[in-house]
Amino acid sequence: MPGKVHIKGAPAKVNELYERIKEKSPGKSKEYWARVAWQVYCQNVNPDSPSCGPAGKTAQLSGPISSSKMTATARMEVARALRSAAKLLASR
Image 1 (cartoon, rainbow, N blue to C red):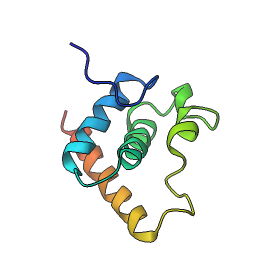
Image 2 (image 1 turned 60 degrees about the horizontal axis):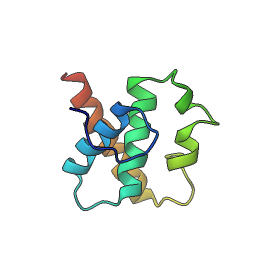
Image 3 (image 1 turned 90 degrees about the vertical axis):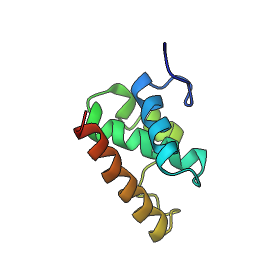
């Protein structure tokens, strides 16, 4: 049975990562969960995906992690979530 679609048009793995990140960081926003899910997918799962290129969904849906609009604390939280997600992926 397919998982819930959180990000329409995204690969199933991105939605799976979104769900895991949401469980680990329940107080965060939908934008945060989507951003981290795409970042993990593009850095660790399928970096060659067309969705991960500059014209792909990463840029359209979540923007770059190093966005100047993000505070230093938010960037640290994203980095922490990325490390946690990478550990989850490595354990599979």
